[in-house]
Image (cartoon, rainbow, N blue to C red; front, side, top):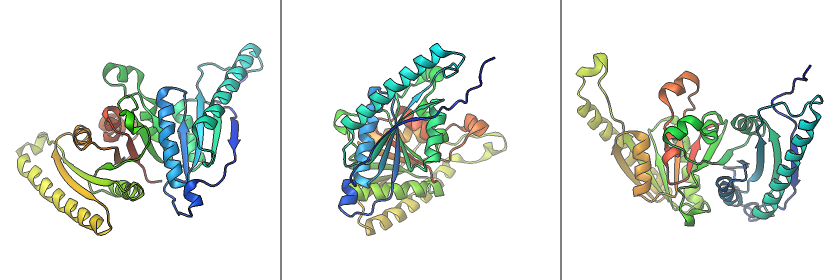
Length: 326
């Protein structure tokens, strides 16, 4: 009779006690990202995401939590399977050593950080840890698969974006230019639909703009409308014109307020599919970072509607900060 093992095993942990971060040492009160989780699978993609996390931690005085997830299909920690248990233990020990070495080599000693190894389903474990630790941000790399490859393989990063209890910084490192290996944004693109989630994304973007003396570029996309059923009598050209006019009023209002606060800001309106227009605007404006909100649809609602944030991440040439209010 096989012993039933829980999906998530006890963790292995390596902790480094550090001196206060540079931000804290300077006496600055920076509380945007107190706790940052960085999933590491030792790929170039995850190593690059760690660089971004370290840069943020140095700026905001954050604590870093490096985690590696061992995701196995079988029951390897069973007393009835000693060979598997021994092999399992060896893999865990090796992963812990590599993770600790990475922490020592890549994370400034002034930044408080921990390194942990966990067992479980990758995206689920990452989200559970973020919830348990009350993390403010998850920094994760994505390979940016598209087309058939994306359909077959999916993306751990996209599942994290969909289910995370906090904001997520997603970095499609394959497309990020070499000089943008560290998060020092100078042009921040902020798509907005003037909703409450959009306000939260803008608030965070403003904090980053102040920190890095960056320029904010506010974008409103007038979506494409299609006639359906009883609505096919509507004049969609008139509707689009009204949305554009109202959007410009809202953008002008936001721009005036931000400029009064000393923030450099520009505005733009585009027409089309939101995710496509956001990524094209990011490329045209040479954006270093896209800050976007998500409503976090799940289940059938997500299956039917998808997520603009996920689609932006899939094709973006810039890092994308997906803001979810905790």
